[in-house]
Figure 1: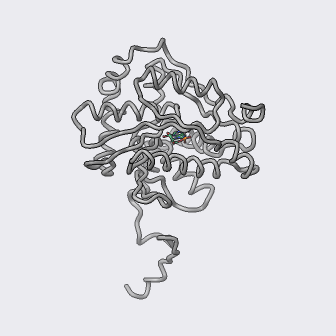
Figure 2 (figure 1 turned 30 degrees about the vertical axis):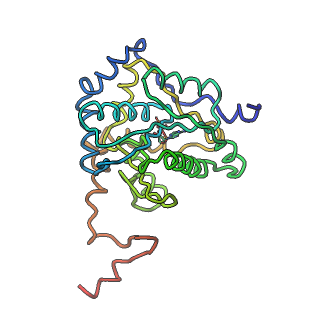
Figure 3 (figure 1 turned 90 degrees about the horizontal axis):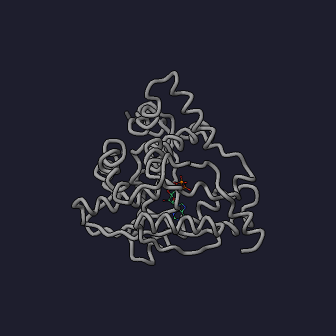
Length: 292
Ligand SMILES: Nc1ncnc2c1ncn2[C@@H]1O[C@H](COP(=O)(O)OP(=O)(O)OP(=O)(O)O)[C@@H](O)[C@H]1O
């Protein structure tokens, strides 16, 4: 790794400090279905059922960045298998986009400790995103990362790619679009990949609140990877963090505001919107106005 790569690999941002020593694996696994039954396990199972995320015969590539969300997701899939649901197979994949060697080591150690048999493979996503995307590398990096994950999933014979986005990611996305992009668009629990045939993306942590993921990780005594990217951190402020804070402050005066944001995407009233987009085509309420 040269000096430039080291600088790009970074050391992470938000640090989740464990509450205690690392707990034995058995205790960590048990806590998922006992201590966190209501807020984590049930919500995971609910999302899988409600959005039909797992079907008979699926082979799912569970994408592990080494952060708190995807480590939990890997353990949840293992628990699901253990507790009777064996109609699917899983592969665990982690793409090394050019991590600092110490970060990569932490990823390997955590997976080993948590008994997650992970395929780690190297790409130069950080380097390329930094080189070709100038001041706004996030979009390019996210696209390349997604491609690198789909590619690996396909190579392993998987038909689904599971990502660790959670409830807060979903409502933050809705708010980001509303407040910054002027559109109404949420993050979907599943979608079909555009450039990879017969491949779907699923988000099984869709209903799980981040707060409980943090508690679970801190209680288990694991040091997860924090965002290991310095390419973006150095160049732009992150609007997502501002939206996160905004939602937190709204909670003080608006009860259940997070749930309301979530529900808004379930309750769109088609008789009270001016325009919408479908399959790349724009529509206006006027298109049908005189026909009714
Ligand atoms: N390098 C990677 N290798 C494998 N999967 C990845 C990688 N980076 C991201 N992912 C997947 O994409 C999801 C969303 O990525 P993002 O960077 O937004 O994660 P995050 O919010 O930091 O979550 P996590 O805590 O799991 O890292 C992750 O939860 C993970 O499933």
